[in-house]
Image 1 (spheres, one colour):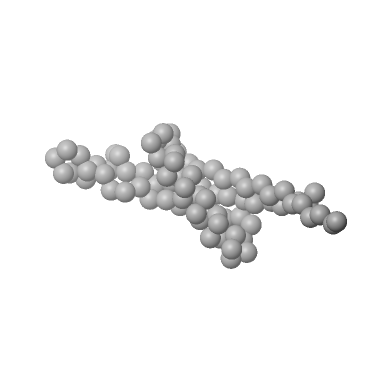
Image 2 (cartoon, one colour):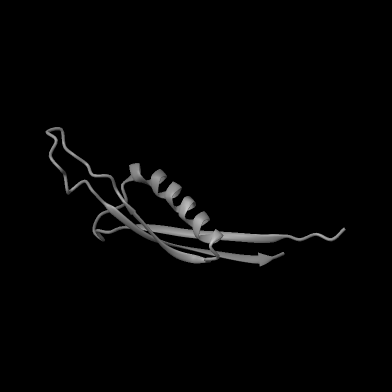
Length: 85
């Protein structure tokens, strides 16, 4: 019986659009989910790498005022490599 095996590696990373700030821990799961969805979509179109972008939802303080300090946009990248084993 002939076998075919392939190893696929996907790398991705994110950074805040504000280089000084760290990525908020509460945003990590949303970033991972968005990356998986976008990578799957783009690989179906034949891409093996690309950019990622995610805007955070507008955040309002307890008085209903828009809080620009709390809003963050994230930018990132991803790449896929495959090798036949």
